[in-house]
Image (tube, rainbow, N blue to C red; front, side):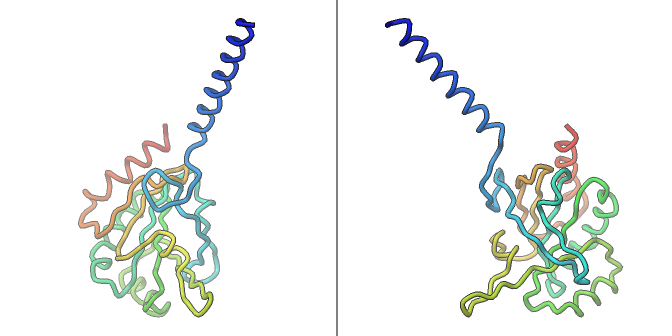
Length: 186
């Protein structure tokens, strides 16, 4: 009887250890715009309306998500820096420049991009109308309250860092991108 009890206890402890190991290795499953959680999913349309970008399709490489608008002064300060980063890192990092549509007509965005020769890909936030209210698919999910705001998402879709505010230099932006690339190449 005593041996059976000990064997039963060992089996239960082994099963518990296996369960905990599997839970830890599967990673986070909850979507939250916070470090250590899955980045909230979205499917957004390119500025020209021809393509759709789904965050879930970008796994395997780090993702740089920047919320901005063409009327935003601080956004204008960091856009040349982001263009420089895009030119350098576009093969190793997905860049998702997410235009927040509110108060930013497509014509204004296109003119701004053309005038400044920005070549990074642009997507527009989707407007969701429900019960006489308006919501925005990505901006609301990411709880963006000011722009610019940037999220760094690792190659597994996990939020690695949130950066509210502007990047003022490549020296400020590069280390964050380098960390993500290094992590992806382990």
